[in-house]
Image 1 (cartoon, rainbow, N blue to C red):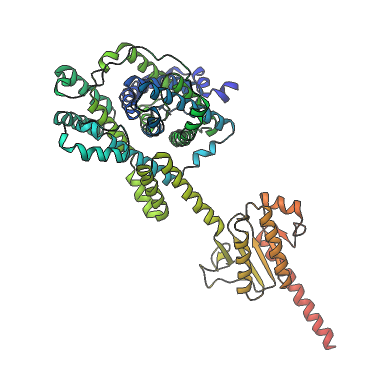
Image 2: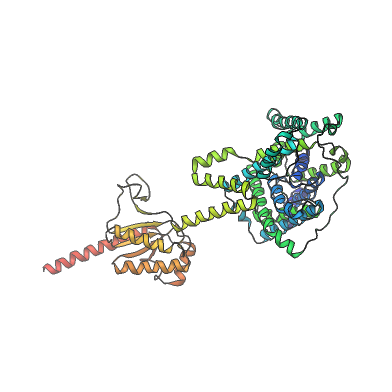
Length: 572
């Protein structure tokens, strides 16, 4: 039970079936074929040498294989996360490679600790915190920025490693300095990466493109023609070390680490949940927070950088038929063997080929179809998506995301402040109540107003609720009673309760009785504890709209009978 709860990956491996071994090994080799060139390329985003990208794969993948609950999710360097890390630490490193690595390790450990704390605090709902338009806009911005940042590698001039504005300015300055041999190699590699998978889906285009470019570079000594190569890659596995820091430095990096944590987790959970649903099992978001946190700590202490879930490599794992977390172990072992046995050939990898890999990675982040869907369904959310993209490109990754989130939250508060409401009635042939504003010919019960308010009743919308319900009563021409369908009022605070009591008193002074129907949850608890409106039972609170209407009709018949009786008595 302990293993299944805290180490689901290990628990599954201990119950491993031999029939899974072949598919898992095949999937592991296929993922490794993509992971190696992309990890090296993603290290370039931050400005790291090749081995740092590979270091960020080995221990994190082993840790996640033991702790993670997703059977398909591949963790490792991610283009978006790497771009955020670069934005956070590059200004602080001031061009010092050792300082850059130390800062990267610190950020990875901070991300890990924040993720573990969030998982223990059961904050897995953060996976739904970034709305779909915000996430798409963020990824589009990262993708465009990543493409702009690779133009120097493809065209053969020195430029900033990341950033949309810096990339475009560098392009304009260096257009006369385009190095044609570099451009030719980059375009050829880019074509292989883009076109080969379309014809042969099981062949990893990134690996094929980088391998062929490396082979050509080694055979023809392309460095003699001015084409930059990756250079010597240290042989062996990374040394495990805890990054050193101080309090002021940790505080300065905490904001960036928090943003990386949120985005990394949301991206990983989106991928994990998608593939889990496809295979008929679930993933625990709180536990995944902890698993991703431990994997990030593994990246930090093994001289890597913050990692996330990788959707493209996860898709390859699923396509090839990976069954369990053993796939991650196979990938980690292959990468470790590559560092031990093939570090020499890695030095011949051309920089333009890595730029082509990153160019395709950036293009893969841009979701044009989603933009079309947002435009069709909601112009506001389309605008929010575009705003997020513009924010990421102009003011930076984290500020751009936070501005978009703030706008989305303000919109949510606005809709809660001025929610939809309706006066209800009935139409022959239509089941249930309908809104009179949509069905002008709908019938209502004489003397009774049936009203619905579609939001929690809280301090910032209580006055609006009071204004609306009094307007409805006035428009109805002083009815005998109003029945509030409270199923949308899922919560209420003290200000809302006080306002509801004021409405009750105001209506009573006008001879209108206020009743509530379908009161549930926290709202009902507050009414029961306060007794401010009276006992929460008929004739104040009804379990259903139907019972409230029946009670009113019974009262109405009794009033009419008493009126008739009074008239007869007066006549006598």
